[in-house]
Length: 110
Length: 115
Image (cartoon, rainbow over all chains, first blue to last red; front, top):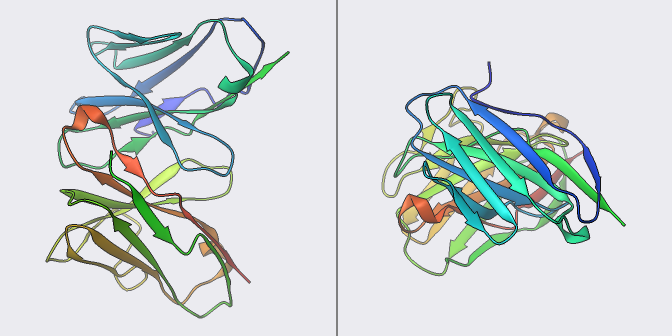
């Protein structure tokens, strides 16, 4: 079983839609969680860190449920520019490497 | 955040040869990592580059195939040795420069094709 699992999609949504991505992690020792965004043929870039209390950054909301080992990302009012692959990522803490999910592909159309 | 210069950005190499990829950071960073992203796949950690000592390799990756150097806190190299077509991939370096909550920064990657 992979350490970080996410639905690969693709998710095809119209502009303005709300879309949610889910992710589970298997290592209960994981302490830090992130959502990264990767555009085609580009390197991953940090979208947001995920905190137990949940956090919001504009149209993006991330949630973490440690008991269920579950992470989510909600995108409201989708834009064409949101089209990308979204990577769910976990690490065991400072000084440890990131473990990536396979990514969820989002395509937003007009 | 740190600015990473990764070279070369792409290369086409003959099987059996070796390629060394360089990762230069504009500031001293505590942690540097090397990842591989095969076509259509997510990122897989190859190793953690340790300054002044041997790299720490993940399962399935060995030093003879992927020797890594990290002579100081701003620079690292990854060599892909005795290449085969299966090594065709994107190789990325990544750094952690501060608290984990601020995430890790990636280089722009090296797109390697082995023919």
